[in-house]
Image (cartoon, rainbow, N blue to C red; front, side, top):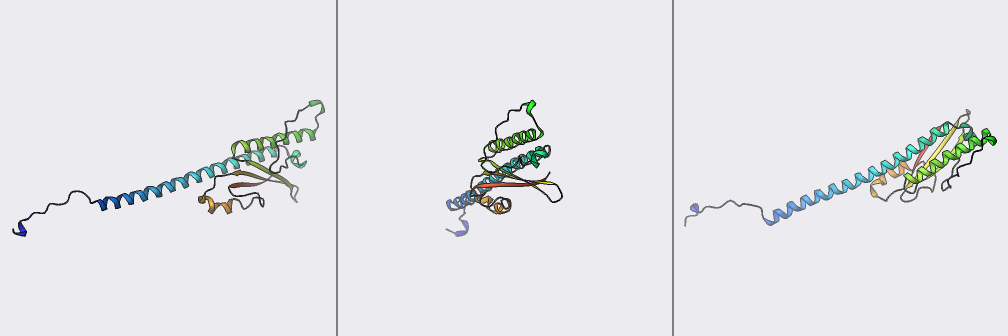
Amino acid sequence: MNPRLIRHRPSRGATLIEVLVAFLIVSLAFLGSARLLASATHQQKTTQLRLIALSLANQHVARDRLNLFGVDRNAYQLNEGSVEPPMAAINPDEATAANAADNVAAADTRELLLNARALLPGGDARVQTTSTLNGGRDMQIWLFWTEAASDTSAELQGATDSQCPTGAVAAGRRCLFLKAGL
């Protein structure tokens, strides 16, 4: 037979090797997108917890500004791990300005602690007030919470926790610091 007369049929379809290579490429793309999705979800949760903590700190500062006498009496001091102050029974006949300021401060502190513990996983708070040289007042608030460990947040951890008290931030523990003038 004459080789010019033999017709070659074009191949229809892919070989097994081509299919496996295509499957490998698609699988790698899906794995990369799954890791990206997990990282984005973790960052979203971290941001959500930071926003909750910031909102709680801002609410506490706003309440404290309404009770400067209580701030001057150091009624807003709060250490990490403190128990919520009990609700004080108020007797209007025995009320003094100092008692009223202390009771309001106790209610504000109680609300901060209850909200931090309810809204932040492992939530806790620390508050310090100081007088400034020009007669003003500064309030420093730290809010703490625990967070699931992830290697995606390691690059932000040093920047976000740099204002936290030494030794207060352990593995998986995060902190938000807010300093406000009253």
